[in-house]
Length: 168
Image (tube, rainbow, N blue to C red; front, side, top):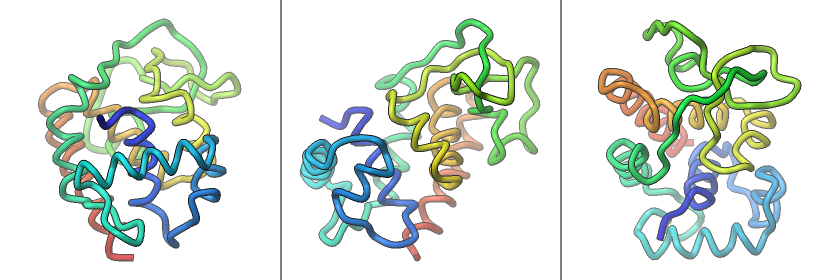
């Protein structure tokens, strides 16, 4: 089964400029090397990871574009501090206008908005450490919570991010 941590690992492997070790990927995501290793095994079993830590970008985009809102649903919560996510984050903010900001809750966050719990607890850590991870996680949040128009645009942008990343 592809759970939230598998998605997090897959996104990290997809956007990594240089393939890392299992240990370095775990360190960057704030999860153990054993968890990364198990996640990579499940990604391989699902056909989303090839040998050499290469992600099947098309398959990952297809999975997230069509199933993220059902497998990893999110509902905007209370107003909290955090970093913008979904249609309020940089990959989509110029194309989609929204009424009230959505944020990934982070106590020291610069923006006050409605909380969208990240796909998994470690996603907030990963987003703060790596700008590319932040962008793809914001797109995944748009796929989880956005309108059909937002999801279409997010899917296209995610495909671009994953495609560009897999060329590197």
